[in-house]
Length: 158
Image 1 (tube, rainbow, N blue to C red):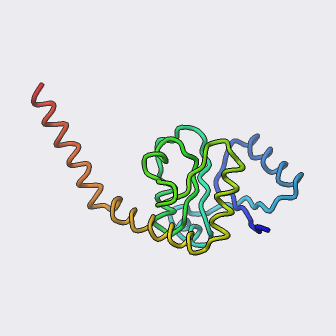
Image 2 (cartoon, rainbow, N blue to C red; image 1 turned 120 degrees about the horizontal axis):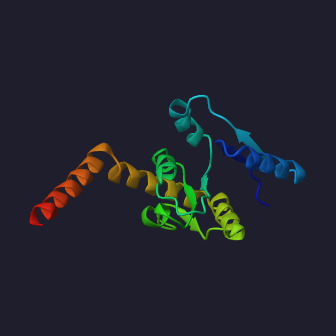
Image 3 (cartoon, helix red, strand yellow; image 1 turned 180 degrees about the vertical axis):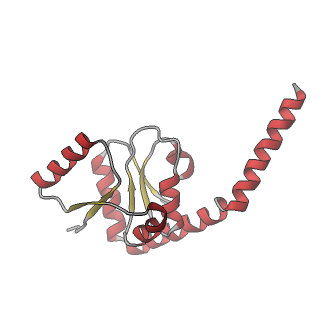
């Protein structure tokens, strides 16, 4: 049997949050709604206190900042296969992915990581190393400079 507790961070629309809270109470689920007083100061510690980040956005999310932050902190990520997640995350290599809307597949991914601590550690270490090497200030600055240079060259040819 898998034993877990879900912490939900952030704020949503008040009606939606009320629905979530009611659902949790009605079904007696092990869920806590959490707040942070200072996002910048508190977030790294929050990542370190957990076993996995569930990034369950089901829309074409264009940014992968939260999963990248979690990965940089050494936290494995399970994310919906959508938007930027499809470009940055690779199932079984630097994260676990699941089909958006497929709660059974998501639960299976959570169970896999809980039942295989060595896999969880390997995934977290691989992801952390990748984020540190590919998304550090120097690497990102070089990428931006390269894009700008290529754009300038194309612009000058027209």
